[in-house]
Image 1 (cartoon, one colour):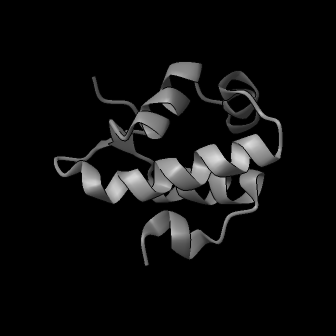
Image 2 (tube, rainbow, N blue to C red; image 1 turned 180 degrees about the horizontal axis):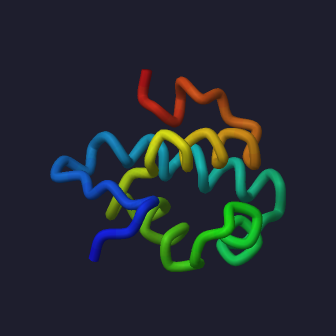
Image 3 (cartoon, rainbow, N blue to C red; image 1 turned 180 degrees about the vertical axis):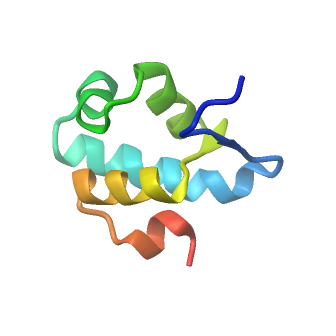
Amino acid sequence: FAGKHLRHSAASSASVPLATIMKEKMREKHLTQKDLAERLAVSTSRVNDYLQGRCEPTLKMARAISKELDIEADAILGI
């Protein structure tokens, strides 16, 4: 399934750090997957895909996640 916010990753190692950072920030901010999904205007399953490392966000979505969770954009992009 191809969505505009979905980039599948053949190597999940690139998405593991993002998932870890997202989970930590969500805990700090007391956000559920549903809360974050609403803020990002995506489905809860899309947020779950990011958190499970099943896909990586597009650049646009990475910026939105960075803003919502107060994460450095470089960390999301793996730079």
